[in-house]
Amino acid sequence: MDFLGVYNHTLDAKNRIFIPSKYREDLGETFVVCKAPDECLYVYSQAEWEKVSEQIKNLRPDPEKRQTAEDINRFKRSFFGKADKVDMDKQGRFTIKAELLEYAHLTKDVVIAGAGNKFEVWDAEAFERDSYKTRDAYDLDIEVIF
Image 1 (cartoon, one colour):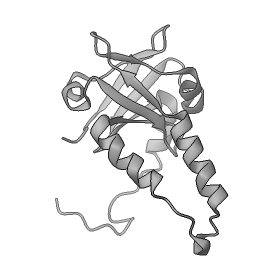
Image 2: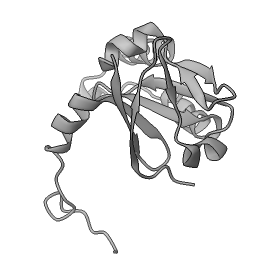
Image 3: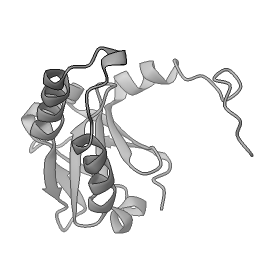
């Protein structure tokens, strides 16, 4: 199942947000939240997280890209160290830990955006700013069958 659509939500006083009902079954009761490159958060089902985790664990330095073993180890430490395994409560919410809230600048209004194998959690204003940067398939020279 792919996570599709964009949903507006509000972070509550206990740093919880609602998961769209369409996402809940495929996400499962326990899932993983982690930092994303774009100052938002990625949310993966446990099955998808295992795929991503394996890719990260198998990273090796690439001298052509000027990557050292220390660089790769630092990346792994940051990636796994800041990730959080969370549970959905009976109301379909989950709590975002303070470190991840700070990273993604989440304070009140948030956007949950489907991104295929995962969904993203954005500060609403940051999501709006980022959406203006979107280029279409033609501009990116991507061949897509519609």
